[in-house]
Amino acid sequence: MTPAALRPLAERLAAMAWPRRCPLCGALLGPDAVQGLLCPACAPWAHKLAHIPPRLTAAAHELYALTGAAAAFYYGGPVRQAILACKAHGRPWYAQELADLVAVRVFGAAPPPAPGRRPAFWNPTGIPLYDLIVPVPPRRGRGGSRLPQQLAGRLGRVLGVPVQRPLTVTRRMRPQKSLDRAARLQNTRGAYACRPGADLSGLRVLLVDDVITTGATASACALALLQAGAESVFAVSVAASEEEDLS
Image (cartoon, rainbow, N blue to C red; front, side, top):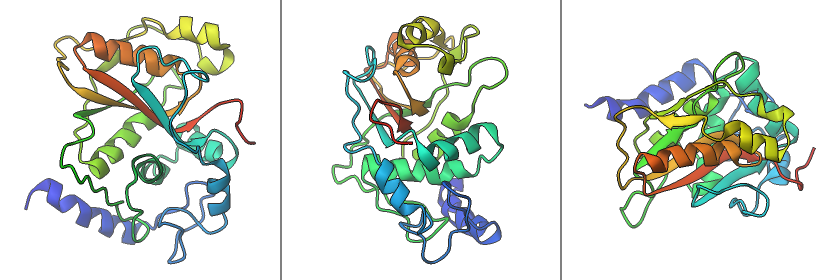
């Protein structure tokens, strides 16, 4: 049996040994888990914060190098707390549920039948939606988050798309959260590149990040991927920050 075939069994055994928790509040997920991913108390919050439709608009974001972008939620309330728990508070295990929520809400995967199980993604055409999944790399210095890499790994397994990390950061950047839109664009422009020898010729790339705010980071990464030969780049994130965000 191949390692890929053994992975679902390993995931089920891991869920038995280390029970999964609701990514929004940390409560243990039991048989009453909503869609196998959220505790009953947090399900209404997830509904309230759902980004419907998931597709982001060019009017609200800078998508200059992207064919499009989508997010599962607005960046607010317990969704924001869950992302920060993964990024800043050393709880990377929540990334599995956050990625699964993206798979369900953005790509239409069937929810997992129980906590710790994998969503079922069925593509009736048999043609992969994307050729490659690429995470946004952590920025240099303290505070660089590896959450996009964790999200990308899980999404790759659910969607059946290979994951690679061709992107690299070329210089230090200021923290984006302290900047306005114009400054964010300037801060990220030219700050990403593909590693020497990376050849993405003709590939449709799914770029994964945790949060899309202005879209400056995603677009700067997409530009680097296009320069390495990618045919198109679509960005997806757990959450997006917009004027309609809820707190």
